[in-house]
Image: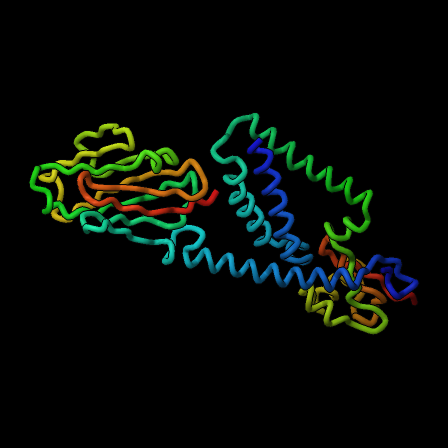
Length: 148
Length: 168
């Protein structure tokens, strides 16, 4: 029973901490972010296994975490409201009125991030070529180009 | 709430974003408080955690950490003025209730002998082998989380009672 509770607690803690860290935290994984993820997984491991290196414990932990993931996806499917709370919602950061500075500051998005996404995804050179820029719940910036 | 623009079909919920940002900022504050508490020693070793408890008759002092982690080796050090013992040996007793919560890994220096009493374990040291102010170190590891009350005494003298909080 302890393994399952421990697995659930770690799952909820990791979800909560990444939700608190914000959408942009690990949106684009740099070399440093990848190293950080590995360090986080190493730091989480002892809390998960608690000196119990048995096969049974590993199976219980994997089942608990994947089970919670499946359960949450089912909850999100049946309750759009909970879906918004669990994953967050997209946020428009640029529209016809220009850059939305408040939203950008709150989500730690810069003009350069938007320009980078515009170049990378649509080959757009300037902000004037963008109709909408949206910060998705995954942390990715998506671009809708202006129609010519 | 759908986005204002009809050309962009998006579920941009402004009210939820406001709540989210408020919770996020409160979370960052709590996050900072937890890190500060960790630095100060409220979540493990650190300046607030380090403590010394002394027997009423000054026969014994115990250095310990108030906040410790379970399944993590730690030290509890007994400081004894051996000049007060003329019999050639001193007996240090650790209470059974304290020992029941932990695994005693090692005692340094090695005691001459140890015997089990109904309410604890008595460690006997030859005073000739010890300096004037002897440091007896108990290396231990907690196996249960929660508050643990330790009681260590020199037989026939006042006990030292101290408590440790063991984080899971």
